[in-house]
Length: 139
Ligand SMILES: [Zn+2]
Image (cartoon, rainbow, N blue to C red; front, top):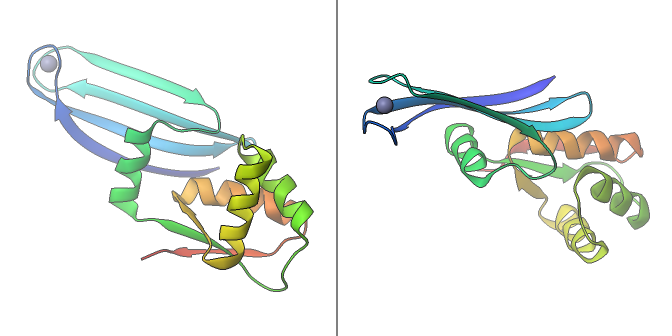
């Protein structure tokens, strides 16, 4: 399993105290999952939320990108055929054909960026179609 997490602090909606919250993304059994688990240090409020799907809530993504930086997925080796790239992208993410074409062009030029877990998932789908890619730090 590939996972990345971070702890963020926030403000309790119930008492105004300080909350600590563990957020993370996971790549588990072929699925992108995300979760958030938090509690208030001043009252008994706590929550736990977990879900899966191609789109992770933006606040979780931003927390991970801030803490760990952006990952960049790039082609390595020979330039692949377009069709398997499109298939891999559309399998990994819910994309229209137009979106997949845009992302395939980005992948070939500057590379695609996102959280480490998101890029690892894309890499898995691409490698399954014999497209060689590498993941590096974007900054
Ligand atoms: Zn509270």
